[in-house]
Each structure stands twice: as structure tokens, then as C-alpha cells.
Length: 237
Image (tube, rainbow, N blue to C red; front, side, top):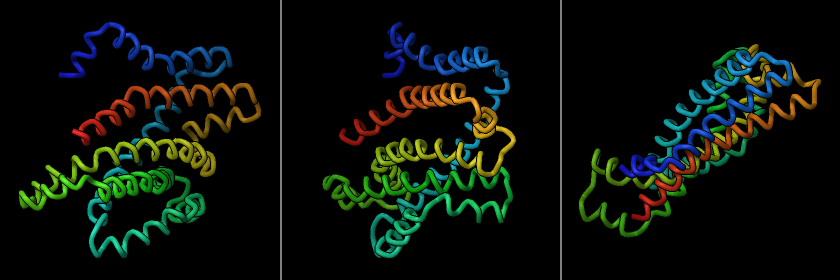
């Protein structure tokens, strides 16, 4: 209802359309000026985005599940130090191992992205849950929340802010890792292939990076920042 009221304002609608259209308009103009194929450039962008989306969904599911299982109790004293060590392991060092098992495939790219994205989500949720307000924790005891009710009325609401914050950080690292991974495994399509094909042209590479950053900015502005604001407001309420 609140979103519906927001979009009754014509200015908000116009700004939203602008943020949606701006990256694509930039890529269209850029491809024509640089004499590139716009459909091919758009196809590379979409393919890379799909790879990142699949990896994010996997990382978000695994990260959230592990966080709510291991954020406290005896398991936490063992699991959290182990996860902390794994987080510190250089992710690119695992790439040759992944290539050895799966070759330069989609599985390699996505699995490496999962490793990159999962840690910010996991540790952000753990941090969020361990610093929850005392009155929320007291409510669990008073109302004897167990099972589904404990999940629905405590874990999900309490982990929202950490989940959104971790997702923003994880996806930021994921975009960077995505292009690097596509280049390293020599993926035939995707943003990595695009930047590899234009690496001898400094101007085209620079404008390609600018368009890429513009896309990330628009996604954050339209999706993640409103979600972040909503999750913190909900938590405070």
C-alpha cells in the first residue's frame, strides 16, 4: 500500500523510469559510437547477470540457513571460527581447483561466485542476530516460541536487516569476481568475454566500465537501498 501511494507521485514514477532506462540507453549509445553490436553487448550483460543471480540465490539460501543454525550455542563456538578461517582463504586460490573438477564451465563460474558472495551474507546475519534487542529475546522466552513460530516471528524478522546488508556487500564483490572469473576461465560469452575482446582499446574499456558501474548504481538505488531502509525500519518498529 505504501509503495502504491509512493508511485501515485508522477515525479517518483519518472525518476524510477529514468533509473531503469539510463543504463540501457547508455549501452545503446555506447555500442553505436564504439561500433559494437548492441544485441551482442546486451546478450553478454544478460548472461552475466543470470550467472550472478543464480549464484546469489544459492549463496543467500546457504548463508542464511547456516547463519540461523550456527549463530549461538555450542555449535557456534566450533563453527564460527571455522567459517572465519574459510572466509579468510583467498577465493581466487580456489579457482584452479574448481577448474580442475568442472573445467571452464558454468558450474565453475557459479560455484566460485557462491564462495565469494556467501561470506558477507553469513557474517552480516550472524552479527545482526547476536546483537538483537533484549526485549525481542525476552519475548521468545515469554511466549515459548518454538519451531515454525520461532522461525516466523523471530528469526526471519531479526535477520532481515543483516540479510539485506550482506546481500549488498556480497553482490558488490560478486560483480567484481564475476568478470574476473569469466576472463580467467575464458568464457566465450559474458561481460568477461566483452572486456577481453576490447582490452586493446582503452577508451572502449573505460566507457564499458562506466556503463557497468551505472547499471550497478541503478540496481542498488531501485532495489537494495529501499530494501535496506525497509528492513531497518521494520527492525526498529
